[in-house]
Structure formats: C-alpha cells, structure tokens
Amino acid sequence: MGRLDGKVAIVTGGARGQGEAEVRLFAAEGATVVVSDVLVDEGRAVADSLGDAAVFLRHDVSREEDWAAAVSLATERFGGLDVLVNNAGILHNATIAKHTLEAYERVVAVNQVGVFLGIRSSIAPMTSRGGGSIVNISSGAGLRATKYTFAYAATKYAVTGMTACAALELARYGIRVNSIHPGLIDTPMVATDDPDGNQRLVRATPMRRSGEPEEIARVALFLASDESSYMTGAHVPVDGGVTA
Image (cartoon, rainbow, N blue to C red):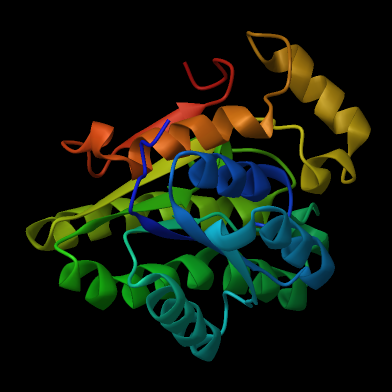
C-alpha cells in the first residue's frame, strides 16, 4: 500500500471497466484522482464511493477546453498533476468498404486526438512538479493487425507511435511516457460488441481466457509509480501471450 502516496492522477474513461479499476487501485495506493468520463452517473458514483480521494469531471477527451478544465480541477482540488492515464477509448467494428467517414473520424477524435491533447495538457503541470508519468492505454491492435477494426487499429498504432515520440521529447522534463497493450479484457465495451468474436479471441489466446480490468490496472499502477522510474518509451503487452 502507499505506492502512489501524495500523487495526483487523472484517469480518463474512469467510470467503468479498466478505467474504474485503475481509479480504485490508484486511490487505494494513496493517490487522489480526477475521474474523467462522459458517463456522468457512473463516473460520479465511482468518485463518490471513494470520498475525498476522488472527484468526478464530465470530460470529452476530444475537446481542448475539457482538458483545460481537467487540469485545472486536478490543480485546484488536489494541488497539481503527477500521473495521467489516457484510458478513454471507443471501438467500432466494420469492413473497410462499409466504414463511414463519420465513424472513422469519431474513433480518431477519442482514441488518437484525445491522447494527443492529454499528453500536451500534462506537460506544464507535470514539469512544475519536477516530472510525472503518462500511461497511454493502446491495444494489442496497436502492435499487430486485426480484421474489421480499421479505425480502432489505426488509432492504437498512433498511440504506440505518440508514446515513443513523447517519451523521447519529454524525458528532459522528468516526464515518463509508456503504453500498455491489452488483449481481450472483460469490459463492457468489449462484452457488448461481438460475443462470438470474443470467444474466438479467447481460443486464440495462449492463456485461454480473457483478462480482468484489475490486471491492466496493476500494470498501470507500476508504470505510474516510482517503481518504474527508469522506464520510458516502453510498450507493454498484457494480452495472455497473443503477441509473444
């Protein structure tokens, strides 16, 4: 316990799934957390359940003004910003031939532009505190090709690249930037999208099971904490062996 004592974090997409698991684990380890999401009722319930350790903010990660509000809230309520988990993301399945421009642009806005804005918005507040840790949630789809996830894979490959570029540029400020690449994780986003496809993915996973949100949260905790103080620019698969 106490691996994040005194640290202030923003976790996007913190209302459910992996984000909720990260929020709860970070709070249990001593952090104060801004729970960021567009799911107001769920996000507020998570924050309220943690008392003074968390506060909820309705936050569309594709909007610059919402990022300014998130950083301001972290600073005004908790005193600064040390950790950012860019967790918010959406999935859209379609063949390329039937993929609409509207759907493509929406996935890019959340999964790619949101991460860019998060990284950019964190530089000043983290630098003022002597450094920090940015954890980008990419995907196994950001390391290897998958069918019918054209926009999603494009954005997750982008997150992988942005992580590497930011790690190189921000190291001089003491800001570390790493990415996590989950495989099939038992979350609402995945469970409601394609159950038959999920079962095929389970069978294709060497460990023959889906992961739990808490298993991603524990890796995020390690990367957020000082235990990973010499890690930056790393891309960490947590996928049951799929990318081995």
